[in-house]
Length: 287
Image 1 (cartoon, rainbow, N blue to C red):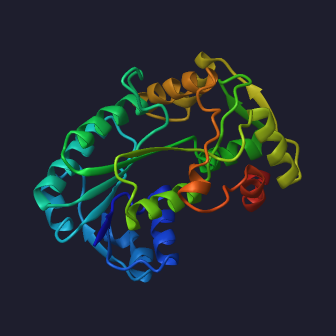
Image 2: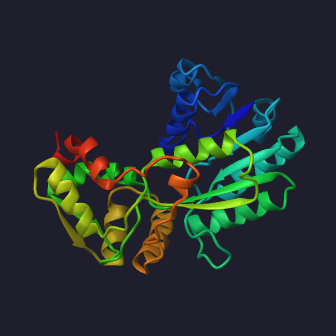
C-alpha cells in the first residue's frame, strides 16, 4: 500500500494522476476534506480523512502502508507537521518515505522554506525509516497565481534581477515521485529536480508573449517594493518573509542549475517552459 499526503494540492494531484497512468494499485490518499477528493476515488484509489494538525488521525491512514509520499502544505508549522507524520510512520511500521522537500534545503539556509525542510529532512534521516528526498526548483505553475495580474498589467514583477531559474513543471516532479514510490533503489537518495533550461524573467516574459499573443515584459522591483506589494495583496507576513528568503536565493543564482533527474529517474523528457506557456496561454492573455 502507498499513502499519498497533500494529494489535493497542485503537486499532489499530478502525483495521483501519474500513479493512475502507471496502473498503480493499492494507493490511498490522506485528505482533510473528502468532498474535494472525488478525483482520487475516480482514479480507483482509496481516501482516508486526516490532518497534519491532528496527529491522532494519521495512524489509521497509515495502517498497512509500506511506502508514503510526505508532502506538507507551505506553513510555519512545516517541521511540526513533518515530525508528526514521521512519528506516526515509525509506529505504524512503514518502510519508506519519499519526501517533497525544497531547493536549497541545507544547514546554512536562513529561516524559511529551505530551512524548515532541511530540519524536516534531518528528522526523517534520523528516524530509522528508509527515505528519498526530492528537492524541486521553482514551479512553472507558481506563475499561474500571478496570471491575472500579468494579464491586467502586461508585466511580471519580481525582485531577482537578471538571475536565471531552472523552472520545473509539477508534472515532472510527479514522474520522479511516482518512480521513487513504486521502485526499489531510490533509498537514501537526495534528488535535486529542475526543468530543462535556466531562464531569466525576461526570457519568461518573452515566452509568455509568444504564447499569448500579447506583449508581456519583466519589470524588476526592489525587495522592499516586492514586500509592500505582497502584503498589500493580502499575503500573510510569514509567507512574505519566506518568499523573500527564496528570492534572495534566486537572485544569487542558486536556482540556475539544470539536473538530469527528471530524465534519468522519471524517465521522461522534461517539460519546457514553451510548452507550459502554450498550454496556459489563455490565462496569461486574460481570457
